[in-house]
Image (tube, rainbow, N blue to C red; front, side, top):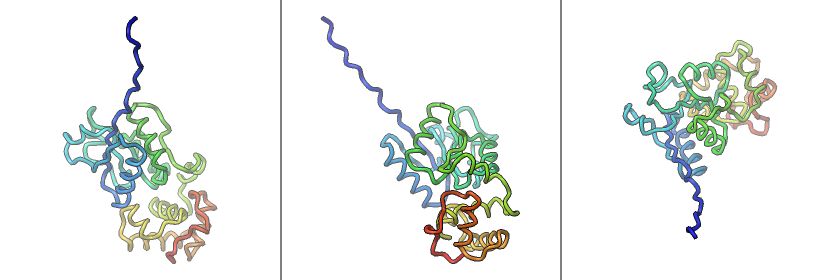
Length: 222
C-alpha cells in the first residue's frame, strides 16, 4: 500500500505593514496592537525610498496629514496598498482617502483584531467596506454634514472630546501643538454655544459623535 498522505496546513502569509509618520503614541500603539494580534505581522516605519516600499505589503497613513511620497498621482503598479487610518471618518476625509488611492479608511478607535482583519483583506485583494469604524454607518454619514458652521478640524476635536480624550491626547492624535488644540476648542465652543467640557461632551453625544458620555469627560477644563 502507498504511504498515507497527511494533509498539511498552509502557513499564514506574513504581513509587512509600514506606518507613515504620525504622533509617536499612535505609531507605538499600532505596532503593539498588531504584533499582539498576529506574530506573523511585522510593523515598520515608512521607508523613505521606492526600493524600500517594495518590501512592504500595506502602508497605514492619516489622510489629514497628506498622502505619503510615492502614492497618489505618483503611484506605480509596484506601490504597496495604501490604507487610511484616522480619528476622522467623515465624508470629506473619506473623499480625501479615495483621491489618494487608499483601499479603505480605518478609524483609530478600532481594536487590533479589526484592524488586522481589514489589513489581511486588503493584502488578499478582497473587497471590503471602504469606511470601517466602531460607529454605525448612520452616525458616520451624519458626520459628513457641516455642523453649526464648524470647520473639519473643529469637528475632529469635538469628536475626540466626546470620546473622553484629554487635550494632550488630542494634540498627539492630530499632530498639533497643545496651544493649537486649545484655540480650536475655544472657537468650536463659541460656535456650538458651550463654555465647559461636560457641555461639549453632551453636545457631541446629542449629535452622534461616537460613544462618549459624561462619565468619560477628561479632567481638562476646556
